[in-house]
Amino acid sequence: MVNLINSIFRKLTSPSECLRYPFVKRELPEGTRGRIDIEIDKCIFCGACEKRCPANALKVTRDPKSWTLNPYSCIICGYCIEVCPKKCIIAHKEHYSPNV
Ligand code: SF4
Ligand code: SF4
Image (spheres, rainbow, N blue to C red):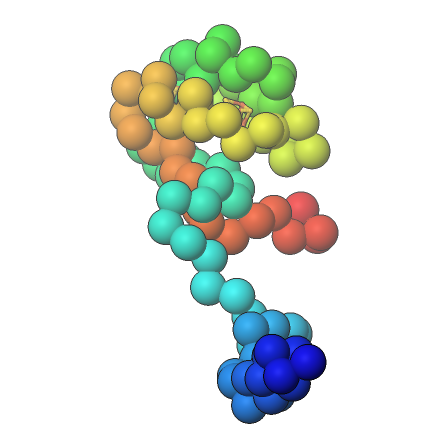
């Protein structure tokens, strides 16, 4: 009984472990894979990322020059980042917004 009272008292007097979302947002840990983005100016439209993508989330064409990502298919595996010869694909910690 004493242990129970001590435990309740400790919980009542210690700081809360919950965040008051949406007023306080959680800091995402390093290495979080949130969403994929591209620096299109560096892209040479070689198509290596499209070939490597296991989810068929990428579509690259040379003529006309276009690079398109389907965020609903992307599983954020990062393979496209690894194969890109120009290192122009980036993974952000933040996730896709519902407006994508
Ligand atoms: S692998 Fe890199 S350079 Fe090639 S098309 Fe994809 S993003 Fe562009
Ligand atoms: S992170 Fe993976 S699933 Fe998403 S576009 Fe790149 S290769 Fe495809």
